[in-house]
Image (cartoon, rainbow, N blue to C red; front, top):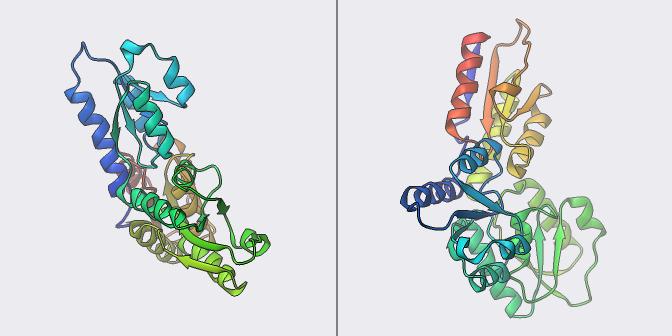
Amino acid sequence: MEVILAEHAGFCFGVQRAVDTVYEQIESRREDEPPIYTYGSIIHNEVVVDDLQRRGVHVLSSLAEAGQVPEKKRGTVIIRSHGVERSVCESLKALGYQVTDATCPFVKRIHDIVERESAEGKSIVIVGDKGHPEVEATRGWSYTETYIIGSPEEAEKITFKENEALAVVSQTTFNYKKFQDVVEILEKKGYNVSVVNTVCNATEVRQTEARELAARVDVMIVIGGNHSSNTRKLYEICRQECEETYHIRTLADLHLKLPETVRLVGITAGASTPNNIIEEVQNYVRINF
């Protein structure tokens, strides 16, 4: 049996940069300095987050929680790769925290687009998952009304004001084909839209590669955290091509009984999955099946 690992699996540039930032802060922190915090989990991977907690990194879930920390313990807050609303950074600084911004540069580009386009009076349409931290952060950079569209079906139902100028962007990890479908629907409905494709190139490559690999193999394994949006999308894409597709967090979740007829097993992983977890799964499958 052959095991094929997708070339673009695991940490993307933005996630690696954010994680490296936290570990660098851990290494440089003196014992007499206040603790290190991240605003929200630095990435959607439970293994990495647990390791950081063991090293003394605290997660702040809200501004209210940040305000409850005693002033002498208000140290460095690291903004995760998903980014935050403009007001969050301002509020953290006002509370006395030192803010280190590890927002992915590709996400930051979307913030700049939204800020500029909304300043010109355009309403903002974000194609992405409602409630996702990146989408909520992007929304917080708009001066005008924002709309979130999560599927072509929602695009068919939504209506805008007459002559309302719209700037359309996308969550970086959104399904690229769905983004194209949503844009096509909005344009066919005759709305005044200016579109910027902000699906990250790494996401496009990862999704395309996963789809092609899943179409070739007998079994597909997708590795990633339960709360990882891009991992869920990889699973959905692979499931469309290969019925025997499985989503696992770590090797401990892998409970496969493969029939002898299986000849090809494909493996891919979300952008928040560390390389050591991918290697463990890959080696285990090669040795045991």
